[in-house]
Each structure stands twice: as structure tokens, then as C-alpha cells.
Image 1 (cartoon, rainbow, N blue to C red):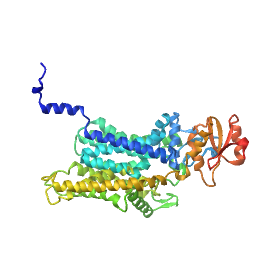
Image 2 (spheres, helix red, strand yellow):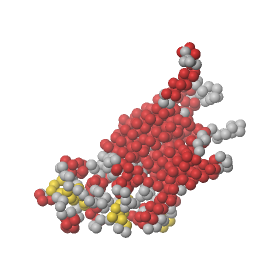
Image 3 (tube, rainbow, N blue to C red):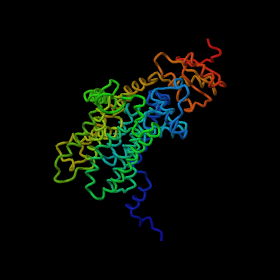
Image 4 (cartoon, one colour):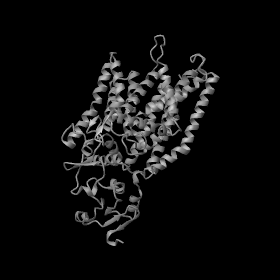
Length: 529
């Protein structure tokens, strides 16, 4: 018998309808993902011209191209100097990028889809959306959306996510771990634990040092949680799955170098490793004092790069969020620490561990901002969003928060805090951010005009000799990604080595020869001016 409209319980009807509507949390997360993807892709396209600019990016993309061929390495060319860029290693007849394989595997997917430049915008957008989703469950939708807004306007986030560096994929892996841990706290079982461990393994395969530093506080917290019997099998599963990272890296190194302990980093620069003492760092020795100076340099750069606000204002919201979490440690009549405060402290510990760990590294690594701090963004953004949101409560600090959660004074305080924050974001987006993006156009003198000249000339098959300015490599670097890693043509780009070029003519006798000048001019060798 059908229910009459009068017999339908309004509350039951609302519950039915709510199941058909996406939650505000989901809509907010999707909105942040789309906005972040569009913004990062715009940076990758308009600022970086879809090209690698620095040595690291070349190594990652080359290895991604090799993986896309179903290979671990390409054979070293007979005359490697014609086809060399920094950080692409030739070792025992094998050519490969000097970095671990994790990020290159992600780029390989982009290579197969013919758009490797989109990998980082997708990874960065997914990571920021994950931060919003996590924050909404911990701190509420308002602070989480504010964290997402701050991330969208962050020069550090946009430039890293528009690049070809490994930081956005590492960040995404770490955010997946955080989301898995949160689900474990809510009762999920071994499947989620395995997902969290695999995420840590992926982070390790992309940036091992970073992954260990980020995971260290969580490992200590896991030991504390292991006192509870229900947690033990899940933590064991997570730990075992995470070991796939070190095991995979050891196997990769063994395949490339013959030894699981031989780091591919040190094949290019023997001093490129963390640690202290002789043989570490470009200066020949690395000290704690030098390492601390590098950390200070990164934190100082963060003041400008995090949100682009003047002075120390970029770090103020984070400091307020951390202060709120520390105040939550006050005795609360035997009640446990609230989830939000506990998570805030764990995130701060993880981000702080990443920063301090780089005392052991010999360079500050500043590139597109303080990139060694990039993976601390979950802590930086969520603490900042919570810090601004809690400013509203300060306007009503004399009253008991639980008794007056929506007082007029508190609402006005929150409105003022949000207005100031949005004003600073708009000022940065309209002034500071455009200048910082423009500063990175044609970074390292890398440029898309060289490949554009080849396309304009309509070349489909040719040997192109690239002339470089003295001491420069980025003219050739700008076209190097257009080579097949196996150098099988039909377009082959090679460095112009003058009198040695005869070998190239013999190697590619059927290809017409063109010369590409540092100013972008392209002309056939037979009609040289």
C-alpha cells in the first residue's frame, strides 16, 4: 500500500533527500581540486612552457621517458657528449636519471598520454583537495576551506605544482597516508592500513630523505598507539607495506649500479648525500653550523613564499594555529586531548621534523621557493586556516566558548579576521604573485622558442645541431626532451661540438642537418650564412 503524502515523516523525507545531495564537504573538496588544477596547469603552461628548466627536472623527465618505453635505462650513446644534460648519468653503458624512480614513474604515465607536464598539476591539486577533506573532518569546513584558499594563492604551491620536480607527487603520497591514518582512527581495517603503508612507500620512492623525516613523528605516535590491541595488526600491516619503499629503491639501485647500496645520486656528484664531515657537500665538508644556516635560509624564504604577504605576516596564521593547539594541552579534568588539537600537534611535529632534518643536508636547495619545506604544506595550511578561524573566538575571550559558540561579538571577530585574510590574499594575488611568476619565466634561460622554431619550420625529420653560449647548457636542455631516449629519430637534437660533428653526419647520413642558434634562429647547414 502506497504511503499518502500526509503519512510521510518530514524528518525521514529530509534524510532520504540528503542522501541524494553531495555533502558540502565533498563539494568544497571538488571545488578546491578544480581550482588548483586550473591554476597549476596555467603556471605549467604559461610560466614553464611545459618544459623542464633545471637539472632535476631533466633527470626526472628523461627517466620517465625511459620508463614509458618499458625500460629501466637507455644505452649510453656512442658519443655521449653530443646528447648530455646535467643529472642524466652515464654508468657502465647505461643512461638514466640520477634520482629515485618514484616521481619518474608518475611522469611515465604522463609521457604515455603525451602530457607529462600535467602530472604535477594533477598531483598538487589532488594533494590540496586531500588537505581540505582532512581539515574539514578535523577542524570544520570553514577552517579547511580557508586552508584551501591560502594554498590556491600560495606562490610556493603554484610554482612547485607547475614544475616537473618530485615534490608535488611526494606531497600527494603523504596526504594519502594522512587520510588513511584518519580512517584507521575511525575504525577502518587492514585494507586502509595497507593503503597508508603503500602511500609512505611511494613517498619514499620519490624522495627518501623527505619521506623519512615526515614519517618520523608518526612512527613514534604509532609505537604509543601499539599499546592498544586493536591497533597492533593494522600498524603491523602499515609498517610492512611501507617497507616496499626501501626494498624497491634497493632493487632499483641494484639493477642500475650493480649494488643495492650504491645511491644513484652519488654517481653524478660523489658528495651528494646527507650527513656531516669530510666528503659531504660541494665544499668538501659539511658541518652542523652550515646545515643550520641552510635551515634558517629556508624558513626565512618561507616568509615570502608561503602566501606572498609582507614581513612575517605569512607565518602569523600558522603561529596562531599552533598556539591554539598548545593551549589545548592544558589539563581538562582527565578528558583526552581533542582530535583536532592532537592532529594539529602531530602535523606540526611532522612539518617541523622535515625542516630540522635538513640540517643534515649540505645545500638549502632553494628552487621555485623553499622546496625542501614543500611537503610540510598540510601542517602549514591547516594550522594557518585554524589559526585565522580561532581569531574570532578572541573577540569573545571572556566568555566560556562552549556556552556562547555563536555570540555576536565572536561572529564579528571572525568576520574581521576573514576580511583581513581575504584582503591579504587578494593583495598578494594582484601584486606579489604575478611578479614572482614573471620572475620564473624562461628560468635558467630555458625557453620554448627553440622547439617553436623547429615547429614553425615544419621539420619532421632532421638532425638539429644546437649551439650554446659559453658555459651554458640550457639552450640544448630546452630541446633535449624532444629526443627519443634511444636516439632513433626522426628528429634528433644534438649539441654542436664543432670539428667533432663529422661523427654525427656519419651516424645519421639520411637526415638533413640544421643549426639552431642561441637566439632561436634555425637554418639548414647547406645554406649557412
